[in-house]
Image (tube, rainbow over all chains, first blue to last red; front, top):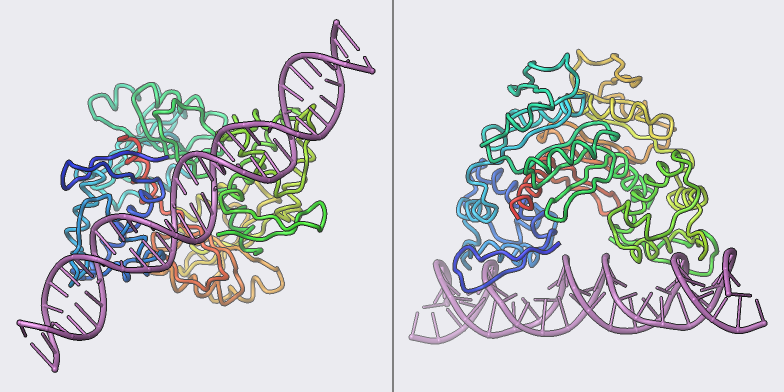
Length: 218
Length: 218
DNA sequence: CTTTAGCTGTTAAAGATTTCACAACCAATA
DNA sequence: TATTGGTTGTGAAATCTTTAACAGCTAAAG
């Protein structure tokens, strides 16, 4: 997938950002946060490349899409570059999401994202199990699936996490799409059929383990 | 990454399988299992493609590496193709792995893989927390990290799952590599430095959510 | 002031992956 | 037997991604 995006720094050019580039930008973003916490104020492409396990030229090329330019003497200013990527992603307000499925995996995800508030926030969990309704896990309340529409209305939630059993995945995805969700992080071991305007990222743990096992065998 | 592999059906040719192809083969493998359970005996590349969300020509090209040939009348025999992929991956004996970290995520992974036994099996969990030692979760016993070497000796374990906090990720990865682990499924939000012969697949949930959020925004 | 060293941004080449396009095939049918 | 319709396997083209190469810049040193 290739997306055309406006160059942030000026309007004269359209720049292409591939899915691969987007993926690496999130990694750089992540690394920059750590660098900032370690009081590093500037970094060269070759060092950022080493941390991200890519080539320096790859880093420089990727950063082009953000419109931020480093300088030849100190490389990239950590804070400014972080801000540029933030702006490119339009993440200034953080990422609000909702979760379907309060099973073991769902609960693990809640625990995982809890300390990342308020930048990343799971606003609500939805589950079919009546016994779970109303409970609060890691600061997030469990609602019945029927209340999905009501709970998210006006919240401008664009992304959702799917952690329900495989046989319920498609019907739940339909529900999400109907309510305006445009990006789905799918942990259910099922391929979802969604309109082309909706982005699905599959996290199929079984398939991924198989891949790792293959490469482990050389 | 590109790997040269022997063509399974005969020895005259070397065929190239890219990482992407390997990824998709695991997906096909997965889909074939479901088809088989649904009593489907044969499938055309165009239908398999639809289920896997790829193009038919992609399916046909990918399947070339397994050496299995369909036939022009019925397409691919589900059982035979499944067997061919199994043979290609060399997964007849299933996948044995070990897990580092019995936190929330680790426990979720144990629950996730439990019903997939004996094909996929987490043989042991290792954790630093002395209070957890000896407990059995989803049929898997928790051991102290110090016993890692002893517990896996002779078991020919080649893959490991890393679900420890970021700050312990590298040191734990070193431990795994020292004991002969060749493939790591890494859930820790940290980039691991390992020898080139070791394959690392990162599952950085935060970065992946950012990616989904980006594409959700169009 | 001029040179040097070492960086960035970017163009172009190289490399990898996906898709197209079509010959060869096969069973059903006329 | 010949034709038809719909498939596979695969070479070659198209597309996408990564890497190399280098002009241009800047601060420091001579």
